[in-house]
Image 1 (tube, rainbow, N blue to C red):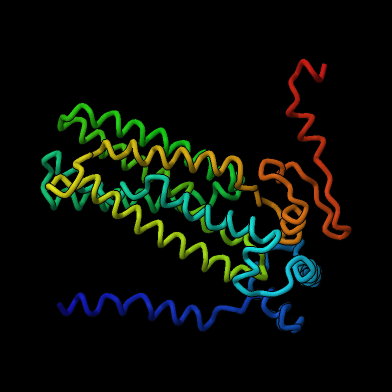
Image 2: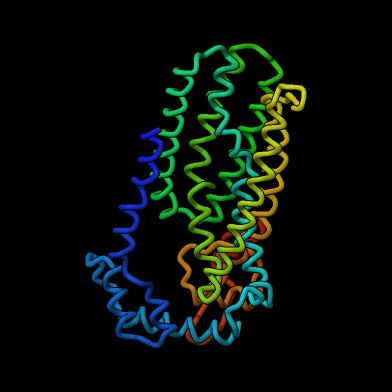
Length: 328
């Protein structure tokens, strides 16, 4: 009992210390009209190993972006999240977090359950579960380097595709009904954990922060997180019914993977048609792309000039996508 009381105290202390020394966002200072404080905050957040970084130029861009967003969406209430251009941005941010829960990731938490079905004792099941989580940590670390090289939309889409394939295999293997098949399911769930933690898991947070309007970011994320929590209730209730073998349960076992493969497929379709690519875009560029209602699939191909508020299709990328016969 004493240990259960002490453990929750561990994490708030370092978090409070870190928050006390964390600088305020330069965007917040600009909205308050304090340019000097914004520059000081930016210098604290910028690495000194970047000789090409110009703090004054960055602050000017933040000011310009803030003015653009003032013109696009006057007001900062929750109602504004559902008006005009911001309605699309709210839908995307909410959708990103729903995709995270509906892609079948809930089955990862039942890894030890499948091992126990295979006859592994609780102690060894727990040890193997720790190995699963360790692999998840490695996947998350790998995602840092992956996001630096590949666009978030690409990572999200192909990560979901890999999850879809693994879920279909898990569901198919479950029909064997042998101990070997249950071991195979355990191995597939380990692979699923790595795939999730290198792609959909961490990239969700990058997308949420980049695709919401800077002026409505806090409110948009609150709405999205509320939708995430609501979807988690649905997911957890459904999974418990699906795996429960008692009289009140459905006793689907690993065949439940087929159900989540269906929701994962819907997530793949939504990501392909609705999720834009924010990689290498400033907030000002993203604002203009949304304001001009550029389709999600054209975000990466559109050239943006924030200084003149103009857009142009990247003809180079379009030319490269033409069939070879047409070029000739």
